[in-house]
Image (cartoon, rainbow, N blue to C red):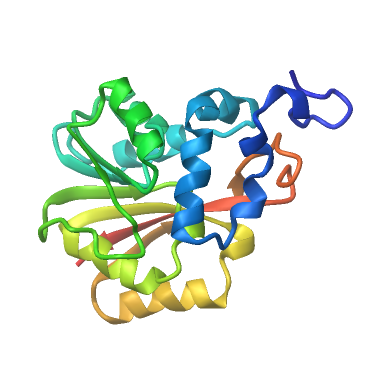
Length: 223
């Protein structure tokens, strides 16, 4: 149910993990893995109640940029597979997912939409070969990455030239340091900006986010 007084999801209608999401900004990888392991079982039920539609929007970005339906796509920070499920729904068939939470990966595996699933900490090298993917999406995950410039370089390494990197970032965390990481990657000749969205809804029914906090959708093309 949604509390009609303010449009936010009722505290009794979502799990404790969903309620505590804002406390995880800046969490260590170990704490993050434990948190999402705990949340994995109720994650898919909680997110629709919170108004989360980023997986659907992200899948449409891939279609809008004419990524072939049989092209290999890396879903970086795939969680329980809601993002991969939307990619599959619009026709994508070669999806690899990575996430730091093993319990989330098991939920993703049960959806049957991923060719490969691997446990990865994105604060470290991605452990994939060069130029192996036609596109990459990273949805709702950059909040938890400390070395964003290094990660962006990794994204450009594993995606082939001309491929796209699509990601979201919370508007309140789209700060000078984040912009510098984007710009440094561009100056290094690794990618070029394609699009930057207007502020879009993030978790409009969450008590700590609501209508006050938004996300941006960015798309870059690998050079």
